[in-house]
Image 1 (cartoon, rainbow, N blue to C red):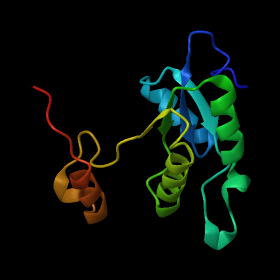
Image 2 (image 1 turned 180 degrees about the vertical axis):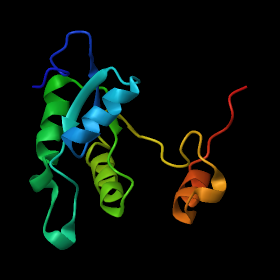
Image 3 (image 1 turned 60 degrees about the vertical axis):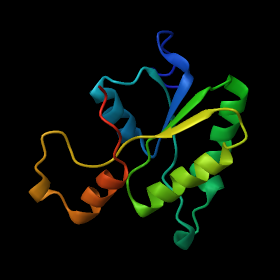
Length: 133
């Protein structure tokens, strides 16, 4: 267990799943997450022969069960493989009684729409949410 996850001030009921140790540092630098982490060893890639056992999904499942995790935040990269990993993980946890959410993707804060690529903009539009009033 790393220094972050062993900190008694962290919320041990919420776990953020990332692909690499560098992703932990990126989330930590945002200052917006106070839970614990699970670092996969990459992402699913059936073409390359990388399945759930190769990236630690079985260990993650066991940790969720053993530690009484209540919420899983999937923070895999917005790539085809990252999305496949997110969907696999969501399906794996469907009957476990835990809340599963996915980090939002889309237009960066301060970004200008004319400079955003079409795929990113399409994803941002499909993931839109109501404005809070």
